[in-house]
Amino acid sequence: MKKNFTKIRVIYADTDAMGIVYHTNYIRWFEIGRNELFRDLGMVYADMEAAGYQLPLTKVFCHYLQPARYDQVLEVETWIDYLRRASIRFEYVIWDETRQNRLVEGYTVHACTNREGRVRRFPAFLLEKVTPFYPLNSSDPS
Image 1 (cartoon, rainbow, N blue to C red):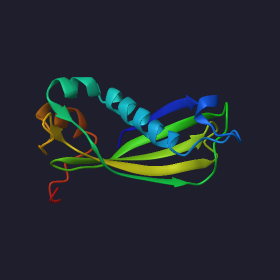
Image 2 (cartoon, rainbow, N blue to C red):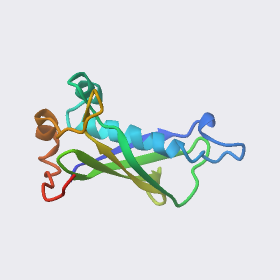
Image 3 (cartoon, rainbow, N blue to C red):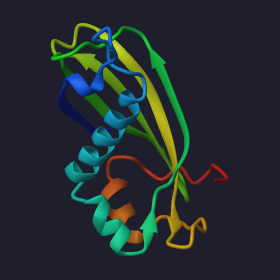
């Protein structure tokens, strides 16, 4: 299983009045991890969109374990949990810089659609990049 590790520094705008990261920023950081994982696999999300495919979010889960604070360096760990014919699930753990403390864990599920929003099977060029690390789970109905 291939994983990506992306460092992020918490900026002041990411925090609330108490200097604690506002909860929706973790979802943004999930997206950064997901994009960087795709880059590690040799694929840029913009190229997929240019080819007529999109990955709209269909589900998100985020479990907050400990708060992150202003100016803290975090590490977003990202991997693919499953790849089905027309959906993909990414898992995330956000760590403190020392990787001693899990701050957040969660996942996102995305459908594969065309420009018109119709669900489609993943294109061959994406499968070629992803399946060496994450075999297609064809027993699932999605």
